[in-house]
Image (cartoon, rainbow, N blue to C red):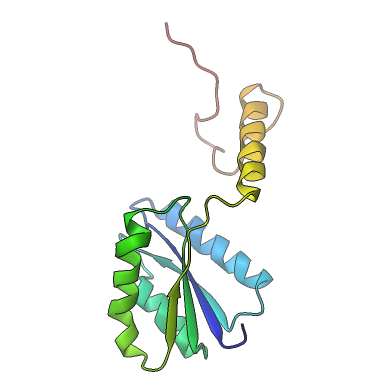
Amino acid sequence: MERTGLVIVDHGSRRAESNVMHEEFVRSFAGEASDFVAVAPAHMELAAPSVADAIDTVVAAGAERVLVMPYFLFPGRHWERDIPALVADAAPRHPGVEFCVTAPVGLHPLMHRVVRERVDECTRHADGTADACSLCAGTDRCVWTAAE
């Protein structure tokens, strides 16, 4: 991986907090993935940095190969068409650099654990036995309601 850069792409959001969360996750991941030349966040649309900007970043850091990972749970149009098109548009700016769009995150066996931990955390909060997670803090989320 010493010649490889990684771009992790989410959809992008009009909600700035969501974009910041993705960028913070990618920075945190980069700290654990030191075998890559560089790791950069990107948003497919609605926010910067774009896929092209992130590709520029990892190539400028020395990447000769660039993995572009869709940060989505399941395959769909963005994985099949949109992200490959964005990569193809950016590629000519970097002659000789190889590109690969990876599979999305989902369908990995560890997702079962992630979902279970989140459900348990939210249930404890709704039951009043735990504080709200960072996503729900300061909101009225994760509470039991009943139809009247």
